[in-house]
Image (cartoon, rainbow, N blue to C red; front, top):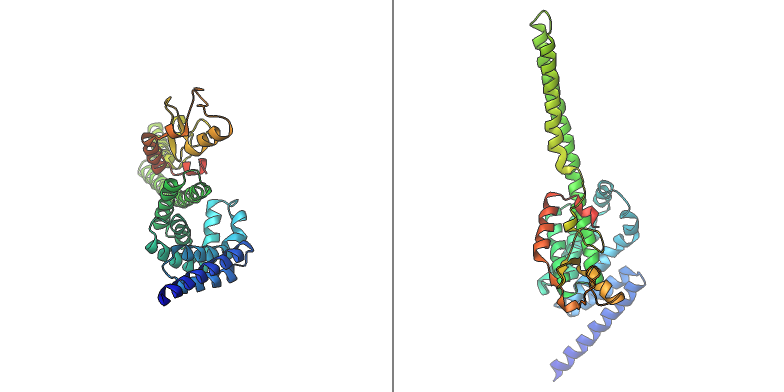
Length: 308
């Protein structure tokens, strides 16, 4: 009886501490909120939400002040700001999120914030994986929830930022290699001319053709880093953006899940293309299109920006 009463009192106290933390968070008093959640964790260390709440406060301490302006920057500039902006708070975000995931592997918030923390230390591979897990869990729990959209935005931003940095590096390497090849051809041309009393028109034409062929080779090599139009079959008829979570209607038309559900809720229960009656329960994930989009994005990473 005594043990049960003590446990009940502890649970009540930790819940009060959680509410205190929540209230401080709403007022953007993040330090006070961290203190409240820390006390709650001390009393009840196996409650994952206390860990994610504290992680959010550690993140917001630095993140909230700059986020709105950062999203306007180019990916490369954003990378350098991230590199300078990190700090101990992000380390604590990572630690708290990992603990929360140990307690609840399906925690959307924990995977999401872990992904953001990993990106701060330029661990793109694991950061993207964590964001992808957050997106998958989020879609499973609430496909139309605000967090799904937010996670996609961050995932797309991370993917695009990584691509832009790699693309810039590849471009520099290609240009350097091309300059070396052109210099070698010109040097060979000069050497050939020094060995003969006069240069023929045929020799000049041959050298010119070699330079043109070299241009074609390097133009072809650079093509994969040049954004083009995303195929219509991979874009939603409503949003006109590349699919994120495609679903197919009974009439065979594929839509972005959030877009078609919004249409049903705000406009009416009918297919906007065929005008046939459409119930939300009849929408089925279009796995074929989803796989096609994943394959396309894998090869054309720049397309993430088109849908972000």
